[in-house]
Figure (cartoon, rainbow, N blue to C red):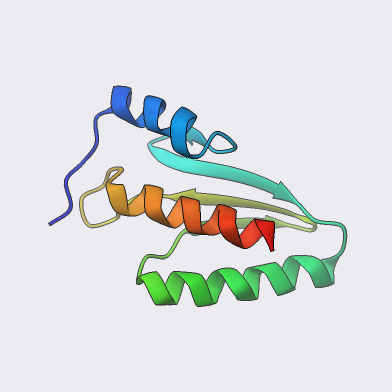
Amino acid sequence: MERIISPERIQQTVQNRIPNWGFLDGALRLDLSFDSNQETVLWLNQLTVLAEKNQHHPDLTINQLNVSVSIFTHDVNGITEKDFVLAEEINNLLKK
C-alpha cells in the first residue's frame, strides 16, 4: 500500500517538483485553459492514455475551455509519491 505524505512535505514537494500545481482540499491541483474545444479534447485524450498507462486516474472538472485536474490516491485518501509522479508526467504532456 502507498504511504501518505504529510501536508508539510506535500507543500515543499509541490514547490520543488511541480511549482505550477497547488495543494487544495487534500489534492494536487492544476488549472488549465485551452484556446479551442478541439485543443481541449485532444489534450484530454492524451491525458486518458497517460492515466491508463499509470493505472492512476485524476479527477477532472471541465468547463468549456477550462480544465481542472485534481490528483490524490483514492485507496489511502491522501497524497502519495504516486500522485507526484503522475503530476510530473502531466507536466511533460503539457510541454508537447
